[in-house]
Image 1 (tube, rainbow, N blue to C red):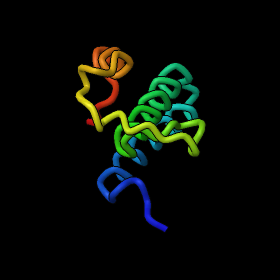
Image 2: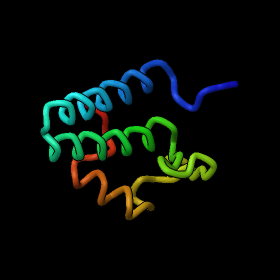
Image 3: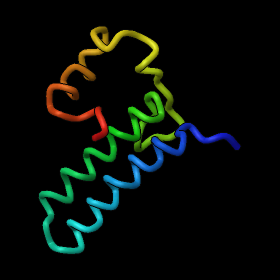
Image 4: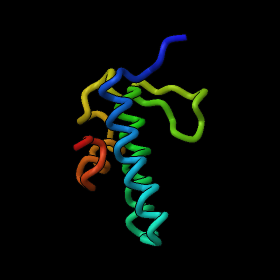
Amino acid sequence: MQSLVDRKGLEAIQAVAEKAKEAAENGHWKNSSNYWANTEWIVIEKTRGVDFYNIHKFNDYWGDSLTDKPELQLMLKAGRGKSK
């Protein structure tokens, strides 16, 4: 079975998910929620649009220009959608 993410993508997803876990373990719930939201967007970015909560639904957001996708414009303006 082939993965929708490469090694670099998996590492980016795991890194921010680990930050969410650590923040939750330390009782920093707001930070944990923010990291979890970032995890969701990184999954979408690295998998080219796999819906985080419905893995069976696949939208190739990156097949078109980002300027054609208003939801991605909002995501990028909010500082999400790009892994750091």
